[in-house]
Length: 321
Image (cartoon, rainbow, N blue to C red; front, side):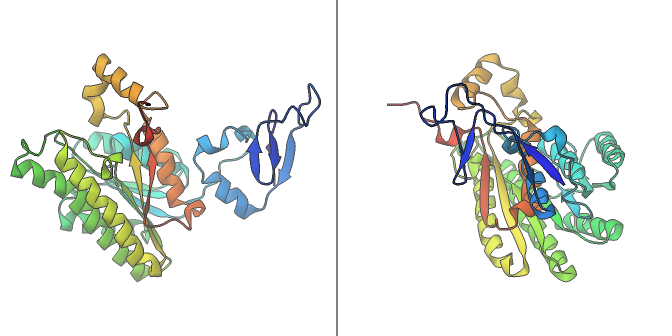
């Protein structure tokens, strides 16, 4: 199988893409398009990469979308809205069977299940409150009873209160920690036990936030929960490595989802946020989903105990000196 790689306006030297050197190339020189034959393993690795990595150099219309997760089964918590919904769709596009967790809005979960089925994959929607251990077990049991095994769990469910350390009451604190951190901890535990029992390793992917590391005054409990997920990812990643269970995290920045609706509806707040992001805009949920799909695929087979931040550069932005 061949694919076309266009290097127009660029050259390749010693493994690095760069701009043509006008001192080394004659005026008007334009490098020809290259056709490269790649083995199936390389093609699988390429197809598992987020699309924005490839768009600059690959003519994707010539590359068939490979089903890199064909035959795999994934659970996505909080799967019928926001980032979770996009993760369900992206994993399904990659060939995975999906267990869609939801708490409210069953009609959305049903519609999403039908969307996955239309892609030619299998899916079931399961109502489960991930703050409860028995409900987490229900999700894992549903994956095994319907699809035979569990290969991937995405601990995505999360809430926030937007309250400071002085304002947060016990009920608010407990609810945030239960849904964000407790669910990820015991979701990891229960999924890992199943993966070990069935053999073959697995992937555990935690959807955290830039606020696993970056303070957000006025949202303290949320930051505490995401900081806990950071250390869960790192510690469980080390503990589960001997079983070939890889534990990673995706740390989104600002994403255009319902959780940020109040900001998106306020033009002045939205402009202030966009101005703070080096890329100048919020992420689309599909862009976060593509990173999750990469971590679930073979291209990420040597990644564990770490977080990939998909934040448009906001964590490293500077007002200048």
